[in-house]
Image (cartoon, rainbow, N blue to C red; front, side):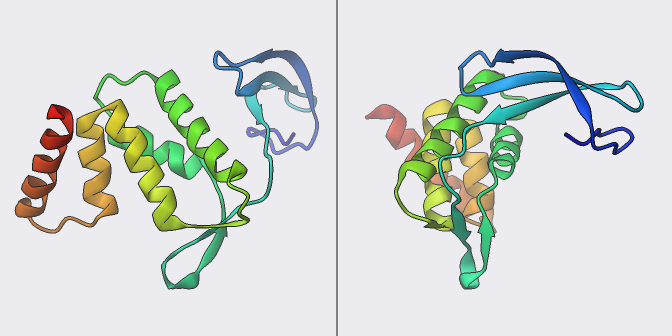
Length: 153
């Protein structure tokens, strides 16, 4: 594992333990060159999945992109990081076990929206505003009214 401080290519594992939800292994490492310590996470990857974006662009599935988007939507909402990790792990598991090597970005976006809808309604609206490209206040009003309808069912 490359050291993030000095870019040396060798490090030693000092401690390993599973994460709280057992979805990854947390490893404390120490660089053999500069002595710096850092943490890495090891996750199971069932298969290589390609995301098909608009315009037929393709890119590899990247868990970190989903984590960043969900974290941004949940910012200042009091949603625990563990719940965000569980949501992202669930989406990753769905994508990898779908049996498909290519997944449309629209399906991935809908998975994130569904997860956020169940997690936090404000985060759901925040994510939807970017994902669905709201351009006017009226777009927010219309979407928020559907969220209220979902909550009253």
